Length: 337
Ligand SMILES: [Fe+2]
Image 1 (cartoon, protein in one colour):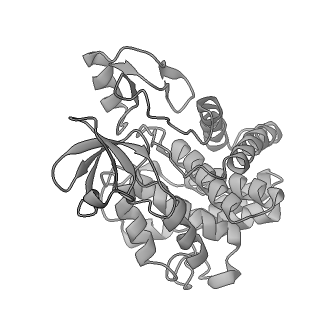
Image 2: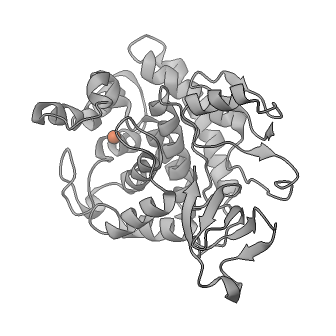
């Protein structure tokens, strides 16, 4: 098997190049990195067209700059970081605006180690895509993406043992955790010059639509639109990723969770958009059908995101779960990750 993508660590170093042969050693290494799966290049996958929202190079550079802001945040050089961050934000906003027809389709590339940085970049990208579809202005999209990158920066001031604890937190620890939006806000206001909308979105990204969130129990439209978008993107990416305290949930299950909390935790407008535009079975992923057969996702259909077209592994037959009547009694029961 030949690798169909490049693999980077959280410092942006390329670990394995595209077209690398997948030896047993390399496969073990990929598993060690905590990656749920990789794209392979072979005859079977020839017609599978992966639509990347952003170029791997941009993704890599974005992870690097977020890493620097988070790790060296107490060092001088904030102005330079701010400028570099702005460049990456511009590229992501451009990509989000240019690809309005592409459903969000991001395979999670996260090593446990660099979780926060990958997560921040994923949240920024998903937020930008959602924001573009909600017709935000370019300036609003810039602020939204910037806030997506920085939403959890307050966590650098909290003990990593608490952040990664695979157990229930004590009330004191929980209070400390719940202070990270304010810590992030204070830090950004003191050391950087971001727009007020950016720092407010960071401050508000754990508020709930019904007013039961934290830290200020804001509700409805009192929470900024940017924060309401980031809230959904944050939960989606956190739940679909691998953490010390849970295995990744299936994107379709997470979407159902989000839809179930529509109007409670999440803004209905954003949930509505997610439920039609999010690609819960990304192209190139292997799925299991309710009759036990396995296939690879070939194409997604807007509006019926749970029912993509797949190519069966054994017969190479194509099944369009939206249009083929013969498939209407079939469901996808598992995403092989
Ligand atoms: Fe957070």
